[in-house]
Length: 187
Image 1 (spheres, rainbow, N blue to C red):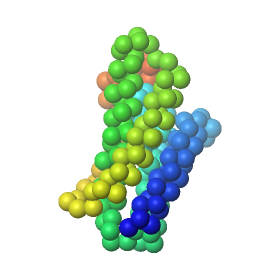
Image 2: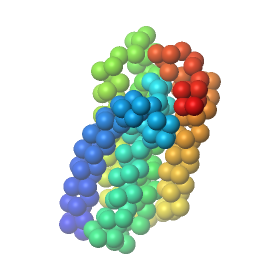
Image 3: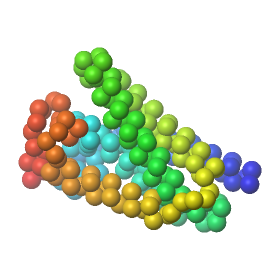
């Protein structure tokens, strides 16, 4: 069991580094691609809070799929059957941290500050990996792997739909462009 905990810790450190690097680079990928609509599915197409949640979600999804394929069979095996559910809970918590943190500090401060946004992202990655590690080590029972799969699939679909046709509420608005319809940028 101690070997498994050490392995989990190594995986979570690797995951933190992976998400921090890939998420940071993902911020620029849409523009680097010449604003390719296909890239807009996984990378932010605007400066909206919603679009910036992709910076955490997409690398976490990719790493989770890799981790599910490798860690659950080669390292952990049957001891951790609910990896997807535990990762889904952690990614939702990390995304909530970004949203709540952003609207709290901008509401108090009165403006958006880039370095605080960056700090929010990295603390969300840290929260995600910490919760992920904690839940993998402690919560081996009472879960349904289908729930984790459903959360990841549904969230991915929501990113796809709301990137093309964002609702007209603040979460989806690009603060730099006002209430421009992002779907026009993708066509």
